[in-house]
Image 1 (cartoon, rainbow, N blue to C red):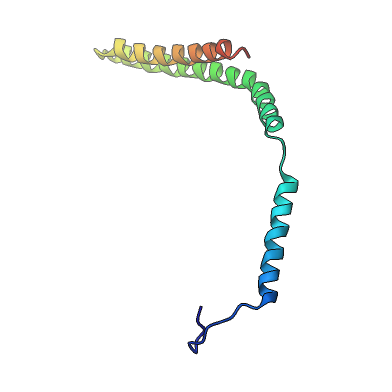
Image 2: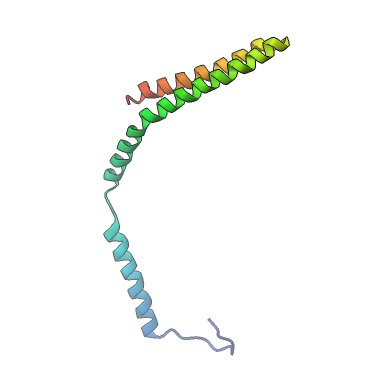
Length: 112
C-alpha cells in the first residue's frame, strides 16, 4: 500500500499483533456464545405449536367474514339482475370453504 508521497507503508509488528489479538478475541466470543442447535429448534417448535390454535381460529374468523361479505355481494348482484351471479357466489363460497379446509387439514396433518 502506498501513502500520498508514493512510499510504501510498512506494517509494524505491533499492528500485526493488535490485529491478531482482536481476531482471536472475536473468535473466542463467538465460540462462547454458540448454543446447541437442537435446543433452539425444540423451543421454536413449541412456540409455533402454541400459536397454532390461535392461528386456526383466526382463519375460521376470516372465513366467516369473507362469507358475510360474499353474501352481501351476491345479494347485490342478484337484486341487480346480473347474469353472472352464480359465478360470483361460487367464487365467494369457494374461498370460504378453502380457508376452513386448509385450516382443518393442516391441523390434522401436523397433529396439533
